[in-house]
Amino acid sequence: MSGKVWWARVVTAAAVAVCGCAVGPDFQRPRAPDVAGYTAEPPAPTAAAETRGGQGQRFVRELDIPGQWWTLFRCEALNRLIEQALEDNPDVGAAQAALRQANEEVHAREGALLPSADAGVQAERERLAGASIGEPQFNPTFSVVTASVNVSYLPDVFGGTRRQIESLAAQAEYQRFQLEATYLTLISNLVVAAVQEASLRGQIAATEQILKIETGELDLIRRRFQVGVVSRADVLLQETTIDQTRATLPPLQKQLAQVRNRLAALVGRLPSQGVGETFDLDSLRLPQDLPVSLPSQLVEQRPDIRLAEAQLHAASAGVGVAVANQLPQFSISAAVGTTATGFAALPGAGVWDVAAGAAQTLFDAGTLLHKKRAAVAAFDQATAEYRSAVVKAFQNVSDVLRALQADADDLVAQDAAERSAFDGLELARQQFHADTIDYVTVLIAERSWQQARINRIQAEGNRYADTAALFQALGGGWWHRSDVNRSSPAS
Image (cartoon, rainbow, N blue to C red; front, top):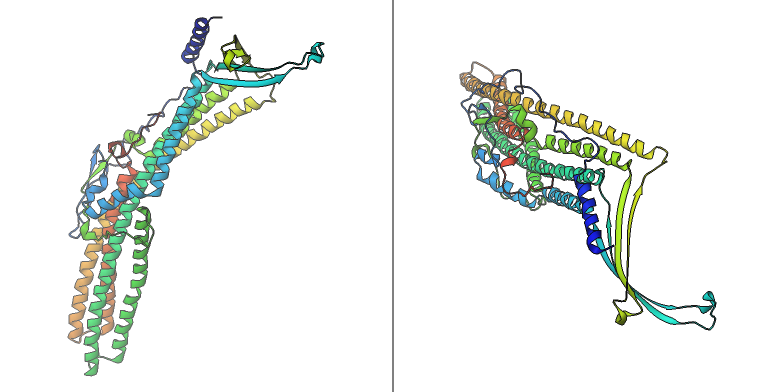
């Protein structure tokens, strides 16, 4: 057979394999839920309070999410910290490497669609035993050199190889959205940790200010005790109040230290290295126009839904692989070379061979059948897991929308409670100085004001944290990011 004829047959077989249909189901993307919103009624604008972080917020339908949504808080320290984390966080590095690995796995398997060729040279030194051919006196020693090129090809007649590539590409897509989920989780955790630090610093500052006020009142009560206006019990009550207030500081300071450690870890540093940026509530601004994506867009935007979809796609392709394995497997191979009695005698005599084969499993005790059934079961599992991811995503958005409205109402109530408690405390102090009430009443009013002030600061922090949670719940705007290479075979 001439070389031209052989290559023509190989190309024809490859064309038949590539153009042939692949067995198994063709993947169809699941449809988005046919619902109009995330809550029974469209979310109304939130209440506004005359305090820090008390601005009203509006929910804007179909407002797109910027890729760098955290900049809406207008905090330069936060922006710097997130940039550092995107560069140095080890979880991001691991997710990036996993995506590169998955892409290379796809490219490696794509090679199976084309013929493979290898060349070889073999040199031998032999001594022939003449007795084996009836010539005892004939014992020649000679060299044999063989050079050859071997070509082999496995035609993908039923699409099993293509389904394997499809499955690997879906796994690469999974790793792509695993990387997006890692980015989104990292950024959201950083924003929430910064808000927690700001809230804790506010609570510590308020507690220290309260301690200063209570210490001044203790000096006043001691002077009044010395002139016989109040009893020793009033002095002890005030000292006890100061001790109780001071006892609330260590837990707050412990939480602050832990949050600082968390920030360092998120940036990829050790606790002893720390971070230079610090946060307080005055350095943050509350975004007032909040996006509410269409439900049909949410399944495109949420990384957890997209990676569940990629798993479903991989499972669908796995069914095709299992079906193809039950069908005949074909092979084509050819070799051309030369044989001579030494390197100097090359090219010597030409040799070649061409072979084609087919194999079909006749009996395997049901192994391939059960593998196919297992692949179908894996597809059913992936389908259920995808539905679960969608349900949880919609619940997440609904919960955050409700939380934002409740946070605003809570801040209005806490701000009013603090103002009322402060007015009550001022009145109690005036009445005490006029000797119309005892000091126990003043202490009760003071304790109410102190707790109301701490509650108000916590309510302020909740609004910032849940605002960040909404951006996370809606997918985080990764589709507008340009600082990360997300290319994958599937995309």
